[in-house]
Length: 127
Image 1 (cartoon, rainbow, N blue to C red):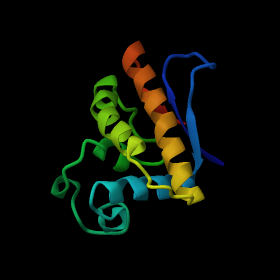
Image 2 (cartoon, rainbow, N blue to C red):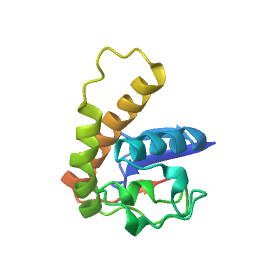
Image 3 (cartoon, one colour):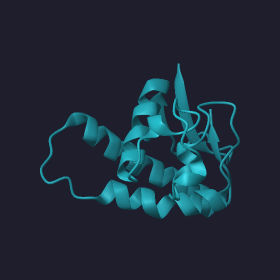
Image 4 (cartoon, helix red, strand yellow):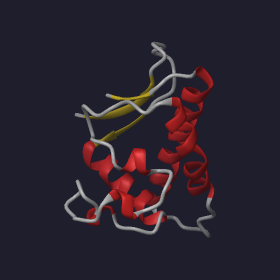
């Protein structure tokens, strides 16, 4: 079983991005590291550090339950998109690490989904 992030546009042909629950956790750890903190230190992820102690536009994505959480609004998607795109576009200096490439591919796919949510003015759903 896994997790799919998709636009709430009722169009089954819209792009989505999916992970296993473990894969999503690893992806979010990578994003948090890119933002300069360890996800495992954060409240809700095994640590005690409060979320208001970090400054990142990715917080709505990083501090989100794997399931049964609130949808992300188009406004939240618009706030997340530029930083996620920036992370996905960072040069990897010839790295051949398959996990890093997977994270970059996932981030790029999520950028497409977020852009669609913004363009169609629909929520990002977690399913």
